[in-house]
Length: 246
Image (tube, rainbow, N blue to C red; front, side, top):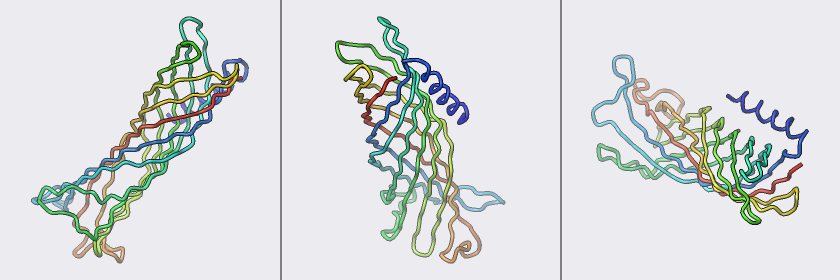
């Protein structure tokens, strides 16, 4: 999928270079990324990990706020009275850090210790292919947009409680999708200002976190506990950019 999206972007550049419908759109985005993790404790049973009596089910959720750059290139088809259709490739990246201390009470009634350290970090990179449809109304061009993306998430899930800890890095490659609305304001024949709202579903990251002792060996009697985790990610963005047409 990554090769398809990259090929599409280069094709757009090559096609646009020979026609006046080509554009480039540098942007700045303010993103609110929502993270929600659910975690289930398991023990070694008959050679595999399985839930057990009085095990822990934990969850937490948080939001990260970041400014980040984006860039889009595309080709615009002016269909006169039928509106304006654009096909564009877009690239963006967001880095976030979450202090994951807001765990709910476990099903067995236990609360996490006050000294527990829990955090989740991730670097998200998304290459997307989008369709935009707009219609000129007086001096403005309101539009809707939707697309799919190839998202790479470099993440790490960390935990420490007393002398026990886990540090679980992961690289996850997901298909993402987005929808949005925006408005474009032409300033000259070749320059326009645009602002948009976009929602993106980034998919999820899954972990199996093995509990270790602080000397980097398994806990007493061997590693007898793991936590299976699932982290769901999505983001809302307000995006502003300057579109340069050629």
